[in-house]
Image (cartoon, rainbow, N blue to C red):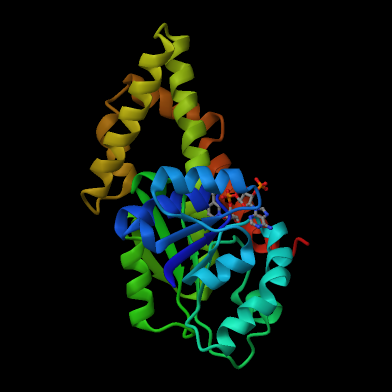
Length: 276
Ligand SMILES: NC(=O)c1ccc[n+]([C@@H]2O[C@H](COP(=O)([O-])OP(=O)(O)OC[C@H]3O[C@@H](n4cnc5c(N)ncnc54)[C@H](OP(=O)(O)O)[C@@H]3O)[C@@H](O)[C@H]2O)c1
C-alpha cells in the first residue's frame, strides 16, 4: 500500500501531488483523474504512480486526498463507497483528507457509511501557491484524527508551504482569505501593471515591477508585527505622489470593494457544500 493518493489531478491535485513528491519518495504517491491522460501525464512528470479509476485508487493508499470540484464529490463518494467499506473490513488503515471547499466532514461520514467507524477525516484548505512550495494550508481542528496522524500528513506535504490549524468556528473565515486572495492579488497586480503601461512602460517591465513591489512589500510586512498600514504612512510623504494615489483609491472605494469581496466570498463558501 502506498502512502498517499490524490483523487482528481486538476489545479489543486497537481499542486499537492507535486509537493508530496518533493517531500517523500514519489513511489509512495498515487494520482488519478476522470481524464486518465491528465493523471498519466502528471505521474510521468513527477515519477509517481498513476492508478486507473477511483476504486483502485482507494485501495492503493493510506491517505486519500479528495481533489474534485464540490459538484462531483457525491458521485465519487457513491462510486467508492463499497470499496472503501471493503478496505475497512479488511483492517486497512484509511485517512480521508478533503480539500473540497465548503463540504463538511459529515458529508463523507454519511455518504461512505462511516458512522461509528472512527475513520480520521482531515479537512484542509490549501491554495494554488502549494505548487511552488509557497502555499498556505489551513487545517480544521477535529478529534477524528490524532496528533500523530496530523503530524505525518503535514510531514508528507511539508514542501507545499506553511500550515495553520483553526477551530471549526473560524475555518471558513480563514479559508476565504487564504484561498480567494490569490485571485484578488493577481487582479491587483495586473491593475498596477496596467497603470505602469498607461504611464509608458512596456508590459514585461510593468508586470515585473508590479510583482516586485508586491513581493518586497509582503516580505517587509511579514518581517515585523507593525500595523499593515504603518508602511503606507511611511511611504506617503506630505503632498507626495503616493498620498495622491491613496486619495484616488479611497475616492473609488478601494477598501470597501476589497472588504465586500471577502465578505461575499464568505457567503459563497458557506453555501458551496449545498450544491448538488
Ligand atoms: N483551485 C483552488 O485555488 C482551490 C483552493 C482550495 C481548494 N480548492 C478545492 O479543490 C477542489 C479541486 O479544485 P481544482 O481547482 O483543483 O479543480 P479542477 O482543476 O477542476 O480539478 C478537479 C479534477 O478532478 C477531475 N474529476 C472530475 N470528476 C472526477 C471524478 N469523478 N473522478 C476523478 N476525477 C474527477 C477533473 O476532471 P475534469 O477536468 O474532466 O472535470 C479535474 O481534473 C475543489 O473542490 C475546490 O473547492 C481549490
